[in-house]
Image (cartoon, rainbow, N blue to C red):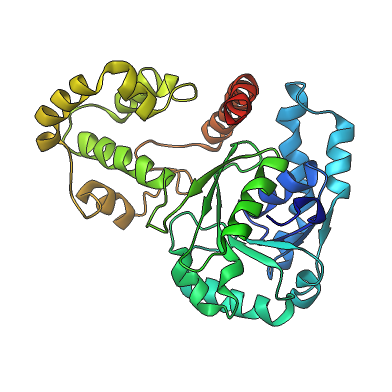
Length: 322
């Protein structure tokens, strides 16, 4: 495996919702971080957004003011693509989920980055193998799917494309551990990887229940948050299956599966909401009605509770890995 101690400079392409948080992860872990975005306004806001992200850490005594200053000092905004590509041993792309745009960007990166620079995409579902078609050196390319908010959620899915070099794959896995994340290996490049396949299976059923007026949106969310969902940070679905007994699981599934939502298309309810531009918090309406105050309160509560839970369990997770 490559020596990860020789990797000290990370490039993040994209300064939006995910990019600035990914930059924070590595800068806080002591790496030099270069970040670039063609949108100069987004690039100019990176350090302010990272500084604001620290507020909840400081309030919970999980970081201090000096930690924030040290992190910010490790982040540098690059002025152009050529400047950005000159230096990082690893470049993480975090731009829009459009495969043609990503291919164009990677072709541009390859013009400027040395051939031994490791390239990864933060795509949440697009094919790593298909994106790599834009590259001459496909063996150095793989997926690194961070979860939102990336500076809080520990997991990073490490996805192997059809041409990804095994040594590079393991190097990136080890690098994520060094940066304080909890990586998982996705050994085959399948749509949605691991997390989104699991998440959207539940989402499809939840939307179907609402569409058929089985329960309100509030009660559907409550049953997740206050029943099986509350144990998920401590015990996963396959551990739960073993605890319950696989014979019991088989019996339940044999009865229940024919009644579950299995459509291969988005639900009519979801399609109708999008058609009338009720697209969620950004529109003020979706399955719920949203005000700026309600959105702010929810995000603050989410981040506070997540950090408390993560702070409690992360030691156990790392112990399990050992």
